[in-house]
Every structure is written in C-alpha cells, then in structure tokens.
Length: 151
Image (cartoon, rainbow, N blue to C red; front, side, top):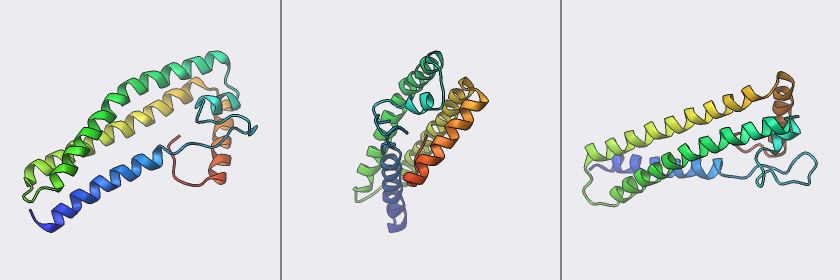
C-alpha cells in the first residue's frame, strides 16, 4: 500500500486517541470549590437547581447511556486496534483498511449522536430556569478551563 494511505491510517488512529483523551479529561470542582465534579457528574445539575427526583431521573438516563455506550466504545477500541495493527504490516489490504476506517467513522458518529441525545434527554428533565442556570455554570467552568470538553 502506498505511503499516503498508510499515513492516513496512522493519522486517523492518532486523531481518535487524541479525541478520546480530550473528552476523558475531568471537569472542574463545583461552584462551592468543595466537591470534585469527577466524583459526582450530576453535581452540576444539582447546582443548577435540580430536585432529588430530577437527579434520580438524570442518573437513570446516564446509566442507560453508559450501558449502551460501553459496548460501543469497546467495539471502537477493537476496530482501532485492528487498524493500528494493520498499519504496521508491510503490505496492507487497502479494501480492508478502508472498511475498518469506515466502521470506526460510523461508530464514532453513532456515539456522538447518542451523546447529543443524552444531553437533550437530560435537559428535558430540567425546567427552563434550571437549563439557563446550567448553561451559566457551564460557561463559567469553560472560562476557568477553556480546553474542549463534552458536557
């Protein structure tokens, strides 16, 4: 296989791992500076005024997402590993490499869409006022640490 295609495969794998690393970075501490949001991701919704019932619903929604996403992320890791291993072969099957990359792209797109659906589902649990407060908190945290992050 030519050098350009091999380079594209390696770059794709690196880009995927960079995206995973960035999205896995922890959020900041809570507004009261006492509680680490990494230990309780629902904390920001509490700070936005969510009731215990809303928090429970948010946790349930998030847990359902995590169960489905966990399987997809494992599959994504497997596909990326296969592509990475293939990139170290002297002769690469171009059709198979492109097929693997297509599968990776589709799975990443599905995961990204599911994250958006999760956000929308969680936001639907909150009132307009709570959503406004949530956005305000998110903006404050982004100012404190402007690195790209999925919320």
